[in-house]
Length: 167
Image 1 (cartoon, rainbow, N blue to C red):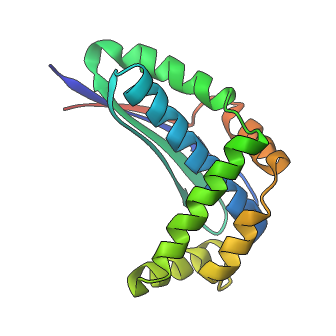
Image 2: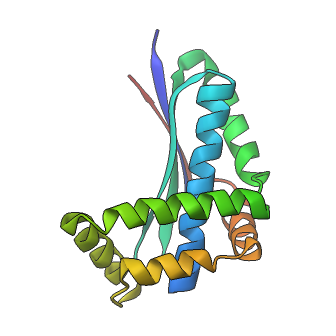
């Protein structure tokens, strides 16, 4: 059976302040978990489903990446757009995501390469050195309102690009 890899790409159009970037980090992790559970666990119609973001000093992109069978491609694209618009940003959901991210970054404190990658990425994005420890503090302060506002701004419009590739 043919596999289709679907990419939905959204422009972030956000100010790349430390506070906004930490809210973006939370939002993208939330999206990644929701689409994975929906398509892979609940429906069983995708082989993989992830979300990631790329930011630069003046803008950024969020990429949703889902691999499914060719006959499910339209359902996956439609469902993914609905999930993004209806994403739950309640206190409980965000608390779990913050805890996950804090755990991941805390583990990365042990790896020099991960620390270097993290610090250099934040420097490219903001023009400032941000330590992982400072980032952990910023993540703890991310509010539901910040994530909800970002969600509406980014996913409240059509994707910049939708890509399909056959494997």
